[in-house]
Length: 79
Image (tube, rainbow, N blue to C red):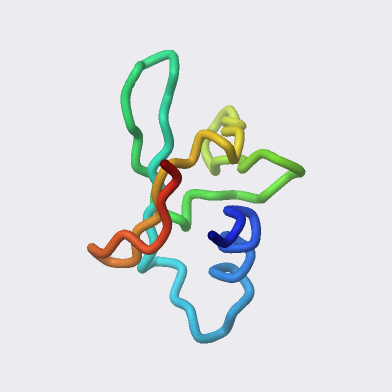
């Protein structure tokens, strides 16, 4: 399986990819549920975190990402 950081970088830098086609799903342990985030809501990748583009720059550990979808198809999933 491709490491999640490699996949996120490929989506960002590969000219053939359209970032608006992608959605990430991560588990929020405080809310105790899966949260979906459009790829375009990622401000930057920083070490082992993704920083969301919101007013408080939420940091999400990459190990919390459980799935990545392109349009409606799951292309990456962590068991």
